[in-house]
Amino acid sequence: MSQLKQIRDLNKEDKEVWKEIEEKTREMMNDPEFGFDEDGNPKPLPKCNRGSWFCPCVTLEEAIKLHEICKENNITKIYDLGAGDFRLSILFNRLGYEVVAFETLEDLIFQFIAEYPDSDIDVRMEDYHEAFPKIVDKNSCYACFGGTNKLPTIPQEGVAVQGYDKTGVNVLIDGKPKGELTN
Image (cartoon, rainbow, N blue to C red):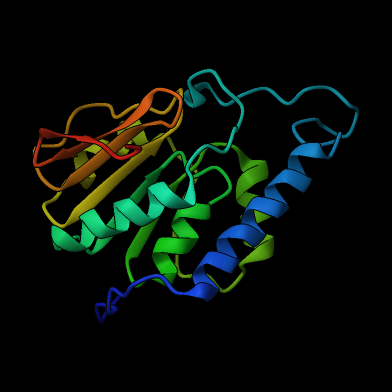
């Protein structure tokens, strides 16, 4: 990205896009063929997936709070670690952030590419644990939502979040705990 986008506040259209993604995700997860090959056998998990199929868990309220924290800390780049249905990536890209989304389930990546072929989100089908040491910098946020998505290490620079609403989403800024995102 040659020119930094303006980071802006959410508007009604952004919230509508979020709701559309939620609806498409519900439809996809109710599709009896999702997660199965052409013979009806369950698709194996990639080794780097760490034990779970996709389960969307980030809420719009959490995304809004994370956006506020990112703005307060001059964050310009988001790493969506375990992007799932890419809802967080899409929203933060719309808000002006540079977004890198890591996802290992090819069904989810293909669905995203089919729905958003012109997106400038940097989608990486690789294990974020291996890439993590190379991506840590001060102006970045590391969004690691979910029950099985975990930060490989606590970054000493930037903003990091991990967890989900049932366990609490922990916020860290420059390596120091700053409470929970969910409450």
